[in-house]
Length: 110
Image (cartoon, rainbow, N blue to C red):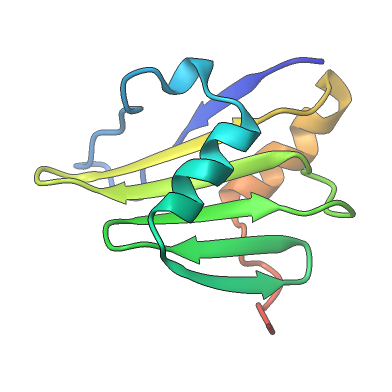
């Protein structure tokens, strides 16, 4: 199984960085971090979205071609950070990259 890290910026003036230690986080670590933030949870077809105060976590669900993966968008005092992590196999990476480019291409109907 291959671990892939994709970082993306939505504006050219924004810098993107991962929180310290993010390279060692598992999907379960991201899930625990998101749930500990006590944010609003929205279940959509193919993904779960957790909106916390200064972060949004978007998790794939089984059945989503990009599963298992997560996108985290954090607002900091200086910029917006976007981190994408795929925990899938090498063959899953094209699907994850496509999902990372546009996770909301399918409307979210909870």
